[in-house]
Length: 263
Image (cartoon, one colour):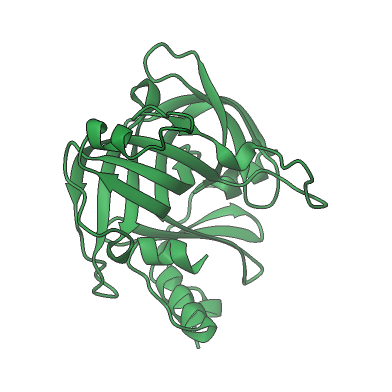
């Protein structure tokens, strides 16, 4: 998980530093009550770095590092939680609204979805990603030239939900993970600085298959040169998303610091 934090400029060197920093940042965020004993806490940095925590009885049950996505929402359907962290859903074509592919994501608002039964017939998803292994190509021509002549050729705008592919010999209790292999054109790029750590990271907007756009965070140490508009990026990514769900049974609270955050 540490690599996901590094993608948004939150590098840590030890488990103790990780725990202390996370508690501090979550405590500085905003909160809303989901159920009587469950609350959701969100910290968002001006850089777009974001942490989302689900807290029950003073204990963090779910923690998600992510990027505050700003891309147009994509229509989705058949949203359902498959374990304590991951949701499966059908991502619809950004042009015709037809089925694109089933994907697995970790949702910023999973606490609301879980409290309302864990399923949603349809909705709109703002999709984002944290890069795990990424390569930047100058353009589509350079991307095609980089592919092995003897292997399969992939388009410069492909999307493969690798985390949903069941292994031949899955481990007991296997469930999909929020990972995808994709490639797309960089249409926007900036290198913001995380204001808490002072660490810069690359934030790019990528247009992939079916005109679907998503924001991507990349650690500066993961690429040899900064991405630029017109480049093609490809690699392995951790997918996150926001459905914009609101608690239905309880009014949203603007909670301040809670006692469990204090040392």
